[in-house]
Image (cartoon, rainbow, N blue to C red):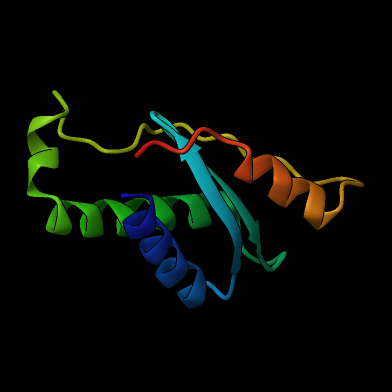
Length: 102
């Protein structure tokens, strides 16, 4: 399913003029490293990523509707931070170090 998410996120990023640099995740969340233009509000980007990926995953995985009591794939919350002085390589390594579910 991580590959399906990656494709959905890449599609969203392309439309928003962003670059998805890295993706990985754990059982209950994903980590994304995205380069985005300063004119784009993070909240708009996250909302777009969540809505596009949710639609795509529901189409490709019909069983998802029964796995959540609320029917939602994403929570309303998210965490975003700037990279500061860290290099892109360091950030990619961090994202790749996540325990990707099967």
